[in-house]
Length: 236
Image (cartoon, rainbow, N blue to C red; front, side, top):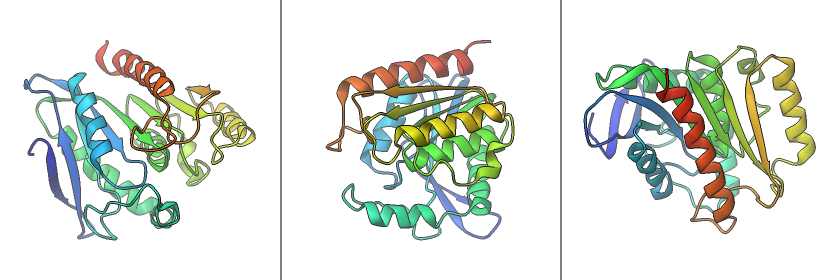
């Protein structure tokens, strides 16, 4: 594995998935985080999030989930229709293979604590973060304003590990009634979760490259995320 670049992993179905990787400068043993992009591809913003996490003491893998459509694709923040189409093309079987490959590669590194791995995702990546935290025995998951969270309902049947959700009250993609229904479904299934709604934020409030960026909401949610990860991935 090479730091701060894409590393190709050969899949059992014959495809190749590229994984952007980074980790702290010193090679001690660290917890890991699988990071999922917003749906626009692994761009500069997501790489900067990965770097922020590595400075906090995490090994970070960012899998390129669009690799079957084209390797290392990036979409414009203004091209919402293409992002929706690309996200809709991801099937649960292929997603499971991708997640398994990324996790196996992370767990094989001697400087990763394989018993302390979490997930973090934004927008469509928020959905993938929850799916990963349902299908695999991970230690924590975080989702920022997850899109189409009702997709892949069978993956919500497992107990999973604690999961933290952030929502923007002004997010037209996740109206309050829809969020409340999702929360009730998780509660009915016995999931352990925390759900935070920020009244003054909309969708994409964490991304400083988008017009919907809200610096206060971003800072508030980031602090909560780090505390959540530190407790579940670094303590005990």
